[in-house]
Image (cartoon, helix red, strand yellow):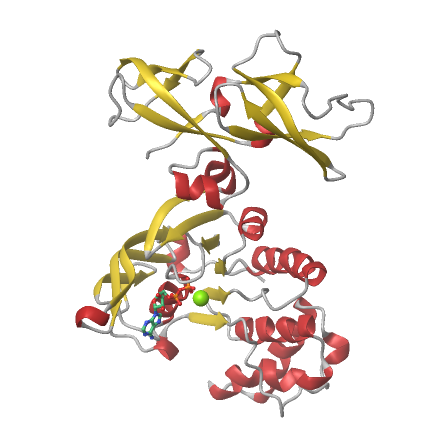
Length: 371
Ligand code: ADP
Ligand code: MG
């Protein structure tokens, strides 16, 4: 299925956005949808744009597809500036949330539509349609009309139709958000498989952090027209650079600490409990300055009061989730935090509300944030 071409062999990135800005409207009503966005997306990557509604995800996709022109900056596909190329001349296809299938055509006709428009011979179209039907596992439904399909099946047809013309790049704008949870999980696995089997670069848009973490090779986290961080799911989750990213991805506790010493990029910080911990620090914090620490709930261990620990408190609430239990702890030093403990067999903590506990946190689980 996979063909490597010149651009891929030459190691050119699939997409580069360089200092891209997009403003809609003018004067006091102007909306800055993208604010100096730069990103490089590699060949065969499953790349996700993640961020809340209105942060500019769709706008970035539309610029790559050529439906909009940037106000400033440039977009390159495989090293070529594409400002002059209309959408249909770009090696790009898009799958939208609303599948936008042709209701009066059959499944097979929908999938073959793009190739027919390109003037491909009937036999070539037939061949490609059969391949695509197989790829999305819809062969038995080839002659059905669109209204005879479930939401998930329609989505498969939309994806098959977008893949049939063999684009270099597939843009997917929240393609799963109309599906119910179970189907969405199935389609997540399906999309990963399709990307793997075809080797096409996917740029996937979602506002769902779990979806982004489970599907992507790399993620760009966006907020208010800017990209805040680009990294693998693991990097984004374990090392969020700022408060927005730490808060948007998964659950996080924030703790204030004071810098008491520093030497180069290393330093000592004092936790609210008075305990000092060695950490790497950004350039902007001086001795006496405050930093915010992000600590994931599953990186904290509950220990007996008096045992070696970094913070101490009382159990304020216990919530059982089946796979794990969440303990809400009121800290003796003020504030609170959440601890998540996996419910392993023979590992039941015998803790009650009001019990005093120690919180043991490895220094590397305390992520020092930029702001
Ligand atoms: P997302 O896809 O992340 O939800 P969008 O890219 O659709 O965000 O929108 C980003 C911002 O740009 C929003 O404030 C939106 O209202 C604005 N916007 C998008 N398209 C237009 C348009 N055609 N005209 C005016 N404003 C727009
Ligand atoms: Mg959108």
